[in-house]
Image (cartoon, rainbow over all chains, first blue to last red; front, side, top):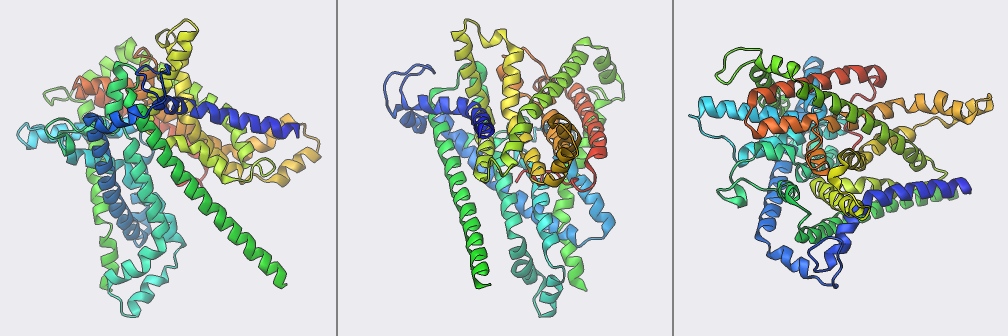
Length: 285
Length: 270
């Protein structure tokens, strides 16, 4: 019993420390004091300021657009890649897997630097000294981070699949494309979905690759693309987290919390269903 | 048999992407590391790196901080993962999710929040964050990388062989010996992949060290970033190359421990 109390207090202590900075911002998002740590009076002033702040809204828009596009592109390329490689000979499979592992183990800053150097070189030598940096280079950077993980998420689902299924569909008269999206895709859908989610979050959270490979474009127009990460970094380099950002933190936290709650309810429901089925089985015996 | 070619063709964009944006950039890094501004072959970047005490210092400090951070994360994360994976204490996956949840809040924002909080606490104690750069950076590193340690450790802890641990106890091992002779060897793959998840990103991190030490601690990531903002492509490329070599060496080193089964790490993150 003492052991249990000790264990629980350790777990909750670490959890509390982990959440403290974020909770701190959240608590002080409900006051209109500009200095953090000062409490004036309870208000939603910061929330209306947040939505009126053009800079933050632009960055938020950029971040979401970029995350959606890069998640979509990475998922398509990664999934098709995984399917194609799955049906290849062993040698090619091994080689591709080795290549795919490079960005996974590589440091983010090395990926960013290598892409930047390449774009600089191409811009200087093949595009008449023009800068290549734009939304497209940024998109390539984010896809570089995400595609290997999509591949790694889809691959195990393909291995679980019955390899004869595709042939069976073909024998029964399906065209290759039809067999692909009626037979294979449904089988590996969970893997595709988790790959999509992972690439979305990777893009949302990324700072280094964005800072290196961005150029003008998207909602920022002629200026450099600002995403949430680069905007926050620029702000906290000069001083405290801007007050409007506290309101934003609360909103992000609530969204993430909602996802976690829904997920855990689903997991528990599955567990209960399984438990009930077991009971029925035992009862029928 | 046309469809057999068709399904291989599906991977063409993937292969193109890997070649164009993974292999080529690395070749460009090697090219830039050994040329000068005009594109002539030189060892300038090489000699200026290995003769500059400042840059060598940065490398040494990065490795030390990386090791220290790995050690701290394992020290805190190991018992945590053990408790979370032990059905005696915890049967619920939700608690594990709670540890992973901060990872989904923008990490620059989290770092900024931590800095503000630390500066308020330190101001109350009569100092500032600028006066304790190492302490603040380490707190930031541990808080940021702890979830990455907990996940791989947790998944290996779930597979711990309870019978072997009990057998060790029955055969007369005291708790310390059971821990070192049975639990640690069984959890080794998790420890190795957790260390990988912490050590490499710590060395190459930029935002955490830059924000929390107020620019006073330069890690390897910071100095690569600095050469990026100065458009020093040759020096930056050379440092990236060194980083790549370090990563390669660490990978070789960990292969020994990990075995083939856990080779596809990264699946564990979801």
